[in-house]
Image (cartoon, rainbow, N blue to C red; front, side, top):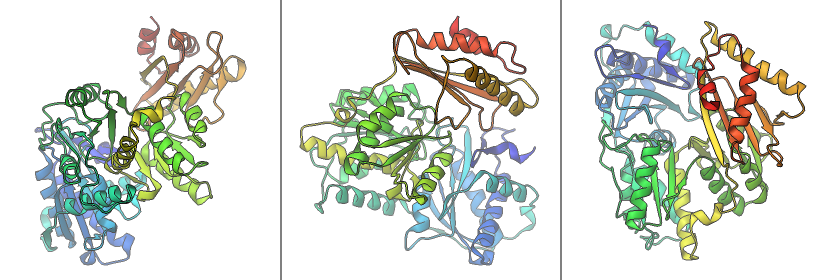
Length: 502
């Protein structure tokens, strides 16, 4: 097997359960060795001077893979700080927290994916590794023979979650400008951890005075028996919405398995994710300091820039991929453009105040502070986004690419759409088109009230297609026109597009 098949963006990920599962303890052990050596080279140290933090989420394959990674790190000659059950953001915070400060860390997780998947996320003081660095790690790991290497590095148990919890508690007290023991008295928060690693957040809320009745699925269970640990999953969001309404809570919060993504629901059970979550965070940050720029991915709704502008900010739409969004926000700040937030519609969000760390739990903590302030004023989080214009219709379609060279076929299809748009005055190419081709339309009697985005998936032979309309029937109108342009496009399976307009 070519281990490069395990690369998923900036992570390693694959099926880890079953006889033919590609992500085996052997692979994990080799990656532990390779990462320790990578850190030694990066830090200009000998490998025996290197320390690596190690954590995992609740997946059933986690303990075995974590043991294998630790064994590999030790065989390389480096030492292991084993944090046990942890979150991905906490793995970064450990790297910069006095008393811990490993040279890097590894999180065993597959995020929101099914129970039989697992993976490795690699972290340094600069954040997660880039795609090219992951490829280099795989290259180095695949040729190793760990059986011939003795264990030589130290392995110590050193829980980090209690420290991380205190860091979040400090953010709440600072945000509320108080040093009282229970600053959240009077706030009712329902926590849904999806049986992932984030159940301790309910404990944190209760310790700070919040009422947590109705909280659910807090116990780690690597089979995820209740719903997928995914803030984008409809069943998961319906579950927490129902729990909030039933408990009469002020809000609910939900995490994925490793807590780098989150979403909330308001007191009425209304989901605040995707564009709503971006709008809510934008309103909070721009209320504190107008004139800032909010960086998002490419599939945000047309109503979002209007909302951000109304709050005194600028919307900067960029490529999908949370590392892309974060890196662009960092670049803008370096150029002197004040940018406090990098956020994807998927829920990946990073705040400048928090090292631009992709941390869903920190994001929720900021929202908890605002919810408490608003409750004291007789208002709710939902009131901040009451003016957000949302589409009447929206859809996402995935067009499979059947050509052997799927990248060239996908680029050719996008170029065909671009050429057509340049020739037809009713198709408006977005001025901030930075990925694929985004076209806006004047539907019915309106202006700029519909759009689609066709782009090439980063890794898969797929053209994702997003479309939204502010009037009924608009999506079908746009997609019918697109189908006419793409008919006979070589190597593109248009079955799903035809079904959408049938």
